[in-house]
Length: 344
Image (cartoon, rainbow, N blue to C red; front, top):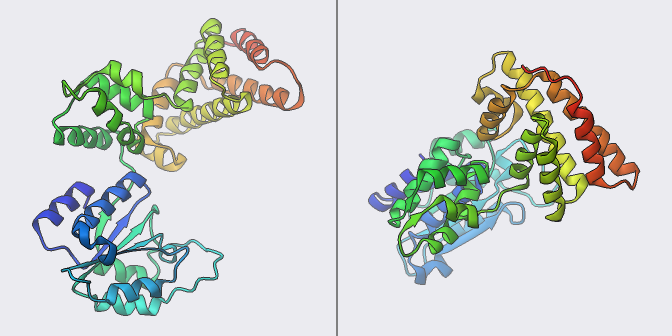
């Protein structure tokens, strides 16, 4: 189930005794935790909510808490965070975790305790017997990163709950400025709602005013200008990044990374890989793949490679000389603009 389904279940049904919240989207992990904590009255939370980090605390301590009766309340909530022993990760830690005790608990859980494993991982090691038992015993809550469409829908739902409207153009702007990262989108909602408090309507101008573009997003505009061989705009965008106190080596590194990704997308898409397959194979957010596919359609592989190699030469010069970064970039654009203009 997803977080919305979890919220509805906890409000309408008796909670299960064991839950597993699995996925790397931090904001979804936190939303799940908030839902569980809300089950315990505020005046009981100090005594009846236990939080344990498995990278710092033995599992036995958390299980002892889970087996104890609640203090002056109906339920006890025990949150076990970062249970790395359920994955294939190898931690160099002196902490020993008693998995036999966990096995016994999963087979005979304490009825008055809600035991929640918050696992910020892509997946668990399904070969382990304890993982198989946990998946059999627990209710699984999905906290995997949302794709663009899911992120859009969840943002709209969250705003609608508070009677706010988000203009379609404003949502597009928010997606663009955050690379469709739901965590970043959700983090900006509070200030947008404050600005739109009176009319309850969030406009594109509000998003432009309050939501900063990431370095990746600013660099994407620069990538487009480079590929279009628009020397004036490319140099202007580059200087804006320098004025914004972005280190030249970092700007160049992000440019190199963007062109490397475009080359990979160009090559693999020609082999027939779908957008979803590209995102999975390259371990990149689907939104970036979507934009990358759109970009590469207009340019040849050679054009991408020429830009990539030219940026590698800039990197070498930045590391070995004291030449002005803006001048190096201008020389790169002059050379690149004179190269083969053949389109894909």
